[in-house]
Length: 152
Image (cartoon, rainbow, N blue to C red; front, side, top):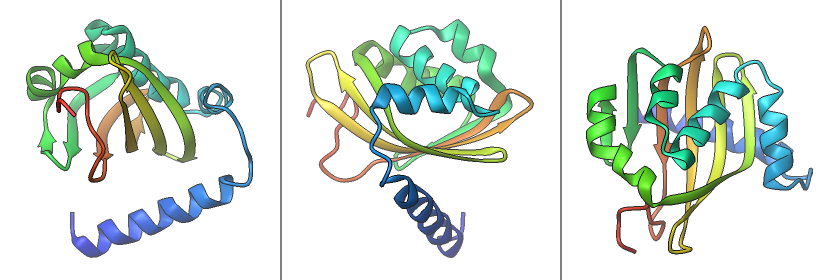
């Protein structure tokens, strides 16, 4: 992805989420609202799969050709996701949807995850959903934020 496109996407996400900032809602409220969007059920299933450590559910919601990207991973496929990232599920206790914006096939979520030992991780998640399946996922996390296996 070009840096200019990336920056434009981040600015659009920031603007959309800023509009929602005035509506104070709990993570449970946000999750319920997300599930009521056309692509929200599949996005919520993503979080459910991680928390419940349910690889079968994960396989059901990922499209053929799915890619996963993060600051540590560049468009990896399902096989590599399972090998490299899925072990993190066993350290994840809970995931809360803080804010989201759904726009057609794109769903942007700010989430906070909680590890088994009580540490938090905060993500900006970008999903591309088509025909009820996640075709792409991009995760952004900043410095000082730990992911479940980081040991922080």
